[in-house]
Image (cartoon, rainbow, N blue to C red):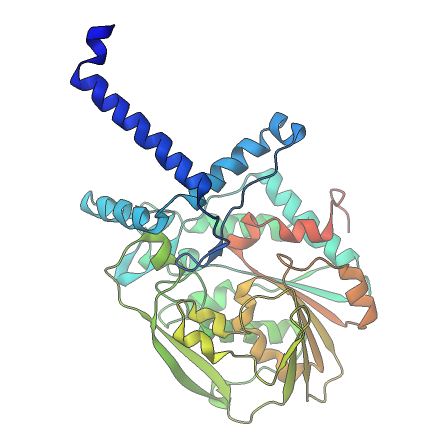
Length: 385
């Protein structure tokens, strides 16, 4: 035994174990980051330890995500891994496919059928909260399922659409707004960013026109807008997550109405108001998509100068941020709720403001992975309408 401890192998083992323990200790001692600007997402925080979370395994899984998110020099390690993957000829890095023509496409992990039922029941439960309100659901496909020519050959982008159709088939008392055909028809235009997971404002424009057909308002034509480029240096979430650097930046274009709309925007939690749905300060920051609607907020109230009497509630993820500006001519008031941050009673919001229409707008990837809508609505009985 003593002879082993004097060998080079023992010395290397000791150094390696010491390094692992030191890295682990430094990770625990370093202050946790709340947000990764590089990945444009909130980071996992140290979970609370309880007997229940320990027994059911949630503490262990949450702690693993915490260590992964808070690992020291995480962004550098992602870059190293991506570079290694590229040298090996891999077309996937950190949940991002490296597609054709510089497109970086978010990987989709198909949910189980039991999860699809839960998602459908959640939408049905939300609609049942306001029986006098007409509920519309728009589940926007991401670039993975629309820009099929850009996707690596071994990737089945249609899986996302198959899952969407299963949810659609279980909806009750809900009008489903299918924007896939319109987006697929326009797939040769710049309807998605190449380095980010969002659609562009052009993509949102085509979705808005489909929404108008369903909701009964006459949507504006492209000729009613001035299209203005406000940035040509946007590197989005997929660029950061993948670590893949050999791509050109995206441009950010706005559809600005030739006849400007009058409206006021209130960010209720922040107690701030604005006369614009755009915050141009974000153009000098990394997350330029946050230009739209000043990023994500729990509740935003928009009072327009429209002569229309209808009031709209939008329950959404960030895909809605670039579509909502198109809606101001068609509603007198628009209430925008992000379930990831909204903690109030959605029923009270509907009742107090005499909402006429409700639009649930999510991109399919977030819709299938995020649990915040379920938490906001609460448990719903299967098949409830």
